[in-house]
Picture (cartoon, rainbow, N blue to C red):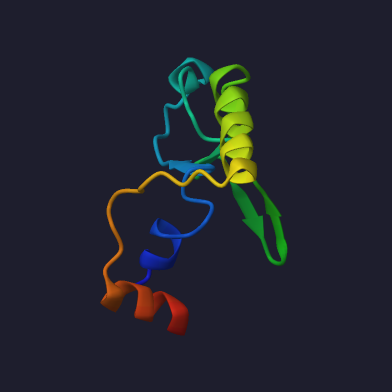
Amino acid sequence: MGGLPALFSELQDQIDYASSTEVVSSDMVGARCASIIDSQATIVDGERCVLYLWYDNELGYSTQVMRVVNEMAGVKYPTLPKVTQTEQDAIEVA
């Protein structure tokens, strides 16, 4: 169940992941996430980690502002895929 906690986490709509070795900034235009982790550029050395993150200054920021406003107003939209009770139980155990 390795990816389930991440898939159904509260950060699901805020953080994304890119694994392409050829990603460029124009690939991120229209990204709704607050940031996108560039896995190929990320460097891990012992206990140190350098993360490279991409984001869209306009749509990404606007989307996050609306996410916060919706949260403050108590508005909750359904998220897909829908988590089943079995998956929710597995997440709580992890």
